[in-house]
Length: 322
Image (cartoon, rainbow, N blue to C red):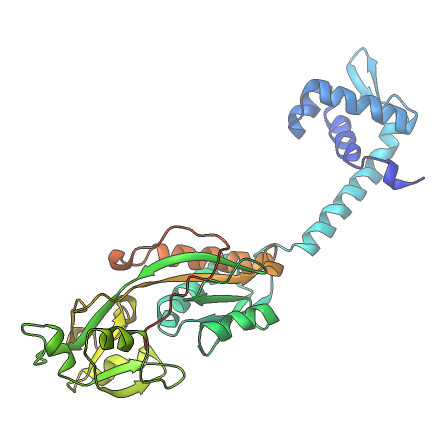
């Protein structure tokens, strides 16, 4: 017998008919209409060459042949269910390591809450957070399969990478309390003091410096560091000034010693989003971690509200200014 010619869904209907001994109740159990269930019963009769159910003074009863099939039928359906569970295991029993690349200041915002959430929902999932080496490298790692997820700042183009926007970031000028530039803050006072900038490539100039040059201005970059996490400690006991995303200050212990000002010239913000490869679309563990990251970001303070949910799209070009 060629299984391709058999609708195996009929076995599920047969199991319900033998359990209920009633066409309408069997249909309700499966979410089928009475006519659809009757049609399935007729097809089963033709397939098996047996009435399946017959009328008796006590109501419908399985035929002897159908009754004899029942234990084996239950065993087959249980085996199929076990096969499906093995292929797509339950979160409670899933054991897997999820490898992530997270924009540096996002590590402190996300990893602790994410770990705590997974302990109660998927305790067998472990997290491996790779050092942040830039958005381009993170997206390359996704394409190569080296990581499962990236919390990144550059939206991938349409194709093999997905993008879900998490939040909109804006920049603020940050300096220590009592800094001479804080009182009467202006463009001139901002540029009168040395700056610390963040660049994973050690660059001392970028888009912001180009914008200043167009206005006939320049700034002195006194310190370049590879991570936003290093900046607050540099500011608290110096006259350095930095331009930081608002969320970069959310977890620093130095926050109470710092003050912020709006940039004296327009500085475009950027979106932080979640990226993954299409090959991970149906991976249960990756999807579960994506869901929790999205929830965690949505629960963060509203000073940088989550942006609209996005879709796979063309590159935005949004990057941190150097």
